[in-house]
Length: 159
Length: 159
DNA sequence: TATACTCGGACACAACGAGTCCGAGTATCG
DNA sequence: CGATACTCGGACTCGTTGTGTCCGAGTATA
Image (cartoon, rainbow over all chains, first blue to last red; front, side, top):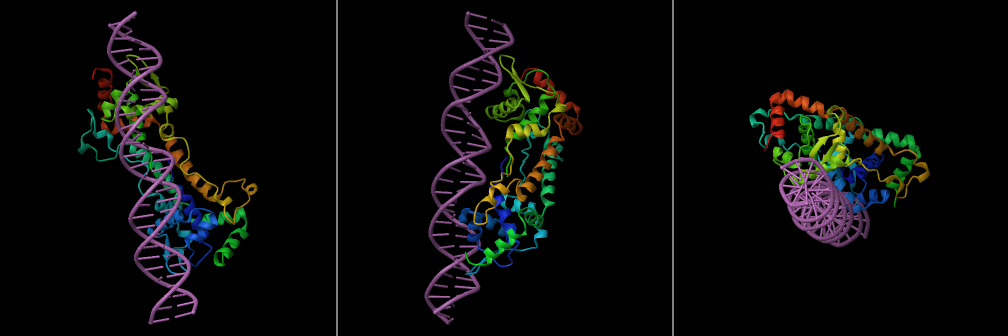
């Protein structure tokens, strides 16, 4: 049970993008977090594919959030970067072996998959309850408001 | 985000083990589910390491549940087979780059990891709320009580 | 005491994630 | 209007983790 490490990068990038209404290139985000720009590009591409950020090309291009930070949940980012598929996959083990239950009797998922999916639903619900705006607010509260405005100045200004 | 496929096997095995108070060899469990006995052995070893099942060697050996099914939660099985580590790992990205927050200011986890851990806690809580006994009860309700007693007879009797 | 059956850990193989690279496309500047 | 420089996008390679298998150590049985 291991989540893609790129999720952390993507979340931090989304928080940073809240302070800039102009496109921010991937290289700048990579420098800001001191991570590989080539690999970070992959995560940003995933966000773009999911429609969370909009990518503009050209000389002053980069990435911008498509929606308001209040309407982007952590679940959106996680599913975009880490894949939308469920963590637990039921292989219908009950339909195999000498005591296999006939296929026509399997109208409902088996009890184990029901329980696992319920737990996963709780996880999803907790993720969907938090938005990028909430995270930005928390950063302001813990690191002080000067942190994000400093980043904003560094993003818009030169290197 | 992908969970080890062996978790499903382990859960089904635990449910089956509730009907037998005598050791059941791994080969029999593998035949019952029509899966590789060699690989299933690995999952059962993980359960044994975690103290959920007790392994007895010798001619009439096998695996038995160590505790009552009511006191074995799904979380126990998942953590035993899939690993106890958290799915989201915080690499302290905030301490890197030009705007790195000083290490002595990082007494509390960063907002992103807090949110991710909260979601993971919800997932754990949902898993801990369900026990193996609950699953066995559900199987009785859906597949009828004759299913488990038939399996019990097959387990205790010859092949 | 010999035996047959069990678990346990050590050993290959495959798939996914991590990380890197170069080409296509566009806004800028001369 | 054209050349340029900067951007994203996808294709490629490598390492790690999970998947699957095998044989040896140990014990209750006959």
